[in-house]
Image (cartoon, rainbow, N blue to C red):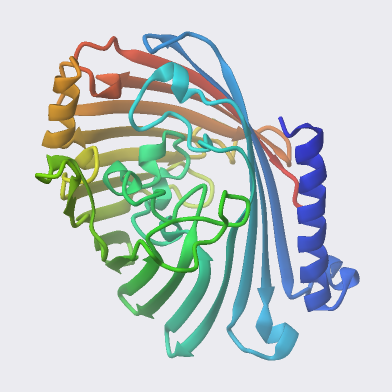
Length: 398
């Protein structure tokens, strides 16, 4: 888990973070006041996951995730109406269940390649006109782009953001667990919204080696999304990197990777299929389809779809069940590389997830999870992988 050093570091970071926000808001007493300009949330998750069939090794792995989020209403603090200061500390520790599952896309959305404490987000948002806001700072693009709210209960990473985008960039795009400096503009109108952002192509935050990349030497990632809201949500998005990236396979005469432009597009939607009102069961469906260039990423595209059932269990108003289907389509160059290494590549890695969540006490939620992955690792000869897990979520908000 956190360990002694991690706990000490966490206390230093969170203590300074909380004191700074409290001072900005008018002191510790203000933070406790119901009308305080500072809102604070703290959530701790512990996952135990492992394959029970197929995979590399059958064993359980434990990992955790601590989220500390604060928002300051600058209208109350300094009279800047509509402006918000947002801070987000993230701590991840524990093991890596995908080492045993052996998939390309992962099985747990809190697994990280590098453990530790990070300043995940720190941004300022302000209105600049009727329905228009501008945001600047360290920002998770997946908080507003390429996201389905109805897929939020599912734990497999592809349901968070399409793998064809998640696998791009010199250090991954500006998503969990490392964001990047960004500027985002959003305009809401009566029937929907349009938003666009430019982000540093190289993600990095305090807590990562090297910290925040300030020179933008790898260029930028440009992304835009337009959508309709109402009874159903339908949106289309485009993304493109300004600087070229290494081709997965093609080489120059000198033996260096050919430089290619990484780019792609996606569509998504979700809608209420059954509206049970305040007391009845409500069923929501969602889908997403994404495509990419296939030259710079292992994936040329993918899709996700599923259902979310609220109030799923009789007499349990906080219970939810979600069923999701997803597929990461391998690019032709990724398959050629795999074949050269002696692997018989599949056309895609495919997964199914079924999960149930219920709040057991006011602060504790339990979520058993089942995942089945076909052609894990993109290997057509791989045994079907079955992963089971349990997530405990503890609400630590004061």
